[in-house]
Amino acid sequence: MLKFEAILIDPSPGEIAERLADAAAAANQRCRTRLLKDDPAKWRKFARQVQAAPEGFDLFRGGKGGVPGTQLVAAWWTDHIGRKHVVLRGRRIEHDDAKLLLDKSELARRPPLWHCYPQYLYQRFLPTAGEPQIDWLAVCGCGAVGTPDALGWMGETCGPCHDRREEAGDDALSENRVGWLHAARNRFAAIAFSRDGTKVAATETHALTTVWDLSGPAAPLTFPPLDEHPGFPMTVAFVGENDGYVAVNGGDPFQLAIHLRSLRPGKDDIVWEVTDGVDDEHVSVQFTPVVDANRMAVCVDDRVRLRTLLAGNGSSTARPLAAVSVMPPATHSAPRYVCPASPSGVQVLDLATLDFLASFAYQPSNQSGHHVYLDHRAVYHEPTRTVIVGRHAELAMYDL
Image (cartoon, rainbow, N blue to C red; front, side, top):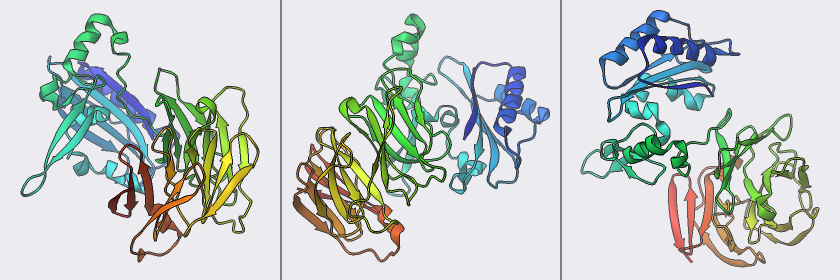
């Protein structure tokens, strides 16, 4: 959980030491264990390192590597006109699967520029006879992609975009949209784009839902968890006229419901109880938008139904599936097919009628247990008429 971030351009040693103290204090807030001690001597030593080298990074952490723990990453890098960028980030590492962020040797595998501006820098693996060669590419919001040297990289933009901003102000780069969408606290469980591509919705593993508007600087819209004991919502989608609602399935496995959460101020949520034909409380509920955004296909374990939005629990013809299946997200603004996937195969259904079109079978997995179903995904790619299946560590593509 990120609690502090500061980007300093050509700061003095005193300013660096002062902001490091601020970062440590902010990252420790409301925490009791593995806190990062304020160490003025250590902060001054880092400030001297910045003065002595063109780039570098350091890691300061509370405790001896366990979680939860406080972490402070301090990095610096020199751009193509000689300015030093010093970036400080203080956060709380709260989960075992993030413990690598407390390992300095692991972080040292990434260049200082990545530690300063990770949202703009990406690894590229080049095939070679032996170990793959790795280099790093910078991505500018104008569309330019290349090595930092080739782009005359200035930290957050390429050289030409930096010059344009200097001449005409920030408004000159209003169309630059490269960046990260940060989870508030936990990792994302599901993500969806609106049909016009201007909004993104995501649910976190504890059912917090956030919607970002990519067309302007508006603050993200955040919905609280659906219940007191949230679980792991598997699906999120934009639905309704003009994508006016974001649909999320209930995180509580005992609450078989889909929540339509309005993006308009003052509008109430709409809740669908998914109970018809369900005789087991321990089932998964997933869905995907359908054709005109006013219907959705709802998958409840081994059956799929079409439902009309904003019309109670009315539904059209239901279809049984071969086995307990996972419903994929929509990958097109007007999808025509849906591909529920199970451990034994994939079915292809016409979304307008739920008529069966085709199926792909594969060897049953030797794993057992309900959670194996989460490892199977299949999506239909409209432009190429192919079905892409992800199964554990493999991808397969089928041509319709």
